[in-house]
Length: 109
Image (tube, one colour):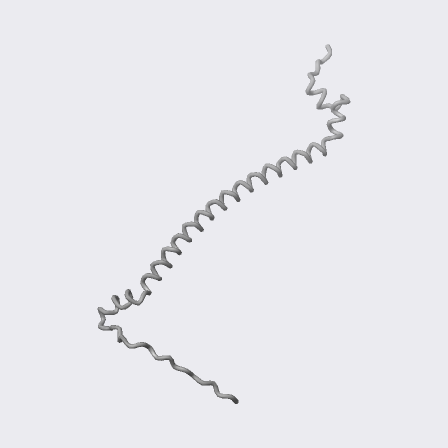
């Protein structure tokens, strides 16, 4: 009694011309699979990078707002009227005199 082979075993035994063509093109198919894997990995990397960029942009805008608030507060607190108000508690006051300009003459050697 003869054994009946199924189609997969015939293909696996390399008895068909189609199997020979597939094996001949196997390096090309493996190369295409490798390129596809690299392409998918590159897309995932790019998406993760874009997410990180968006998070960093949000952080920058928050820090910029904090900087502007701190700068405005510093400008307000360094006004002469604010400084006088704060130092009046320790007994300092404005002299009311106009400051004099001191000139230093350079000597010619």
